[in-house]
Image (cartoon, rainbow, N blue to C red):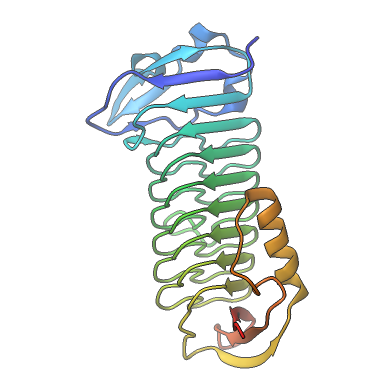
Length: 273
């Protein structure tokens, strides 16, 4: 039994490799040779994990992955427990559908990170692509639990159709953030892109940085929400992200919208001074 299973990409790859199913909980009972035999996909062709990665260690639910992984998709999909540490940037769908455990990416993440996530925690120390914490195409709901924290910026459709859970973006976020959100929270430290909360039924956008309030939202009041203080304290203590001075106990303008029959979507915009 090892403290950690280490996967090291042997060389730069010139086409995407789909590693869906490579999760710490799946590797935990396996010997080194059996891990190397696990199936990955190169286009429509099956291959073995060991064809691309050197495998060191066995029978551990801690997984460390190294190399230029920008063309490696599906890592950690469906993770239910254990830990993954990814040294560098990674491709699409990292942590999609995970129900538990911890994934820590020391670089950027491609599109669809944490797609339809149900539990656990996913942290990206760099930037994330489009649809972080969003829904599968055509699905009625996206993220239903867990936490996603992006230290850098994120693309479009962040937290789209989220049902529950928390998405935090330390930098800017693209257009259509929290589109059709059902519930949950999106916290943005930087600028929030165009049309935030479009079609939202419930849930909250907490905007520390600049945000253009859509015309379908109406001003309700300005106050000091205790929920925001608790949220920012949690994000700082667990992930080390800090807001600008004054945001912890500052005033927030509350706007309500969007779905016309309910208007229970919420935007809390920090108002310094």
